[in-house]
Image (cartoon, rainbow, N blue to C red; front, side):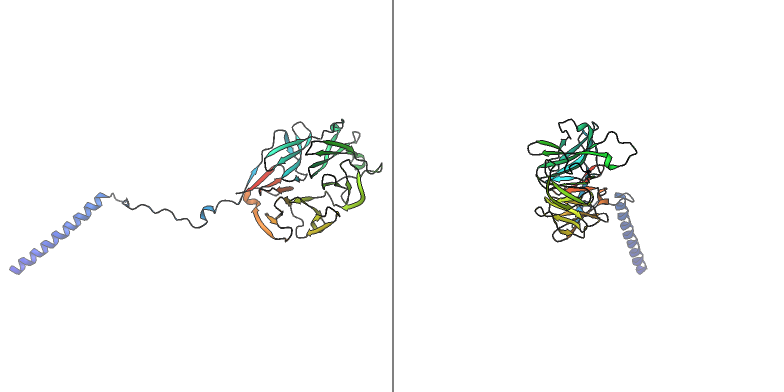
Length: 334
């Protein structure tokens, strides 16, 4: 009986111990509502950024449309941008219903208006036909059309009655206007291109060849330079490159011969630059091309900046790229 009592007492003691343990567990469960994790007493660890992760979604370039001054109603997207240093020149329509050349300083963001006011009463009957700029001078060819031309008459020899050269010295503001009569009574060809070389010379072309002319609309010398079509050209850090059958080629200012053709840059949108390179569009990507080595550097995809290449463009000394279409678009590095 004694052994039986001892066993019974041991079993009762064990049951009491298990009951007390269960009660302790229930008390802790009551302190924390079901389904709610207990708060940690440790401070949360800060998130760890992978190298470069913070800049992963920041684009290299950002595009914005520039606000035009209130006197401009429309940009002529079929004309190319002319550049002088970091200033752009564009043919525009004004709110007055007239044409003008707009100058835009890309570094200061200021605009300048150049009306084709000749001071001799012909302004009302002329339109801006060609323009170019170089070495502190703006060359504007004005076309006077025949008022008797029938609407359905497409004979260009009748349409083009007279040309005038309006020459503006941008440093002094001096204006000169002269009637173009270098063919001395012979049939005036349809003029297609104008490339200002410096303050005293410009190339005036008919789609195949070009004559050298002076600010007084007189022919200089007897030679001709081959300039095809509308005489597409760009300036790379002030150096003139002209479109040729072999590609964009540098024009030697002394001999007026083409040298150093960039043969790989054919059938592409090409833009000038103040940073010593030419910008070239290919397959939706804009590249910077070193004209001396041909080395290409990818700049951006047009899709990434929600834009498309325009007829002409230019990169200023700050690396801002300006594209002309039916608007003026600025693409800036971030």
